[in-house]
Image 1 (cartoon, rainbow, N blue to C red):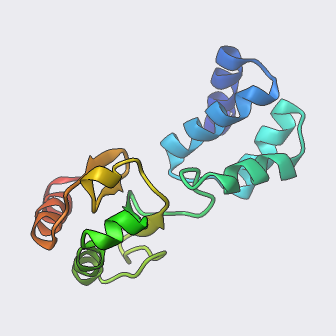
Image 2 (cartoon, rainbow, N blue to C red):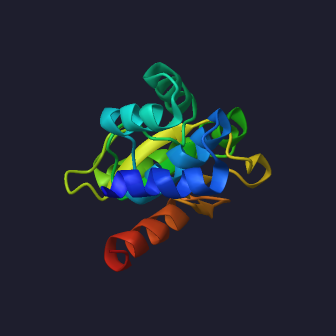
Amino acid sequence: MSELKTVISDQIKKHGKGRDALMPILQSIVEKNNYLTNENMVEIAKELDISAADVYGTASFYSFLETEERGRYVIRICKSITCDMKGKGKVLRTIQDMLKIKIGETTQNKKFSLLETNCIGLCDQGPAMLINDDFYNHLTPEKVREVLVDYIRNKN
């Protein structure tokens, strides 16, 4: 059994074959592979007996369900007005300068991708960002440099 079918099968055992199993399956595949391929979505549709369009529509609606290959570390910087007012522009420029990428791009070594996202729930602690599942708040250019240097040097 392929790795994909195993993930789908495990999630069906937990959640059943109903439409409500779709999100846990999508999340599991993204957790394992970092993104969803078209082939993944077609296979999920077959297993749940729903249309591939339904699967793709769900996956593309949620910003945390990647449908494009991304770097090992996905940096999501909040694009709310609150973060803007608290200095997000300087923080974003620092990230772009350090990694030599712009929003929506991935480093050549596939280690980092940089995305803007709607509110991540830390408006009172902005500017804020996520790197995969790790939150960073009250960001300054100096703090961002420290965080990124740690990822560049110490994370596999």
